[in-house]
Image (cartoon, rainbow over the protein chains, first blue to last red):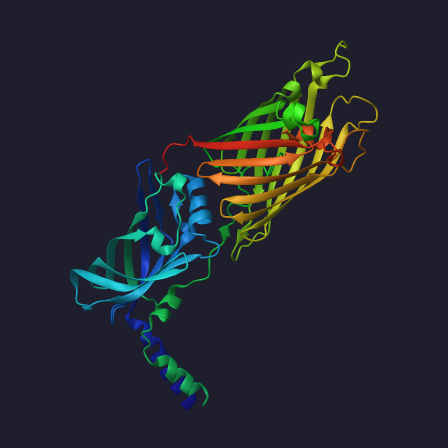
Length: 179
Length: 291
């Protein structure tokens, strides 16, 4: 009996760790490349994120092959020739919100951490809009990604079709992590 | 139990490491279709399991030159060129139709392709892609018959081909395909030419770089071959740039459609009856904006 009680106490102690964590329930990531010949846009709604409300630590995980393009062939080239999605299935962003403040309200924050795309990790710092309302959190951010930094090469023939820096817009809605 | 206490204690210490946050959301990958098994809907002359998506029109220009062993007088065959102009269209992502016209024997062909299975990864994995293919070819020119003075009915100009295309992308570089083929010819030149031809085609591609691939295909006939008929064997290179795919190859067959290269290949590799050839594919997206 004692053992069982101890077990339950320890187990609940274990679970309480995740009480402060928020996971994304809806996500929307837009990739936008603007070049002289054409503008290319893709949307990914299959991404996941988690934020620790205790300290502002966060993680984003983006499945590369779930970006949807208007043209199927572009999507195929994105995965095959540029992102090499079979080799590098996910892009991730892990880090911490600076000067974390978990009180309710809308605020502009600075998030910094490691962004990994195409197997290359760089240190990144970006501003984001953070909205905390009761049991919900919403994050919005737009930041540029320079393809060359992540060893994504654009052939010269397509220089006018694909921008060397693409714009990434993210929107995540969070709810407390279910126990 | 004593052992478990420290284990639980360890886990109950709040861990803020970001890697742990990542592991919280790092779920098992959902089942995903395998893309880009081949670069084009044609491997060399034969079909692949690649399909055009709904609303996409593919304009394919193919050439096969004359035989390399005709020497410098014929500029190694380049003086003598055969062309096929083709249009393929995606009605849906799984159903494609196409028409084409070859200058060789003035053949008009039409085809239907349907994707039955798509190779998938993940928990609902599917090891192969399977496509059913059917085509009809009409020899419209006078060269269709041995004796041009004979009054042959129209049906004697018709050739029917049925194939299953079974492909597997083994890894991101290597893809293989098995292509059992059945063909019916209403009229054959001699009694030594079977009306029904069965061939077991094999083919593959190996990607050397992201935009360059090496291809090979071979269509050995199981049924009897008449004198002077050989099995089609071809080697090629795919070069991809954006919406174009260039395919350059060497083959012992001068026809660019199943009707011709499976059962009417007259070139012998051993004698140097090799044709240089190329396909150029350009896709046009005719579908209205989906977003």
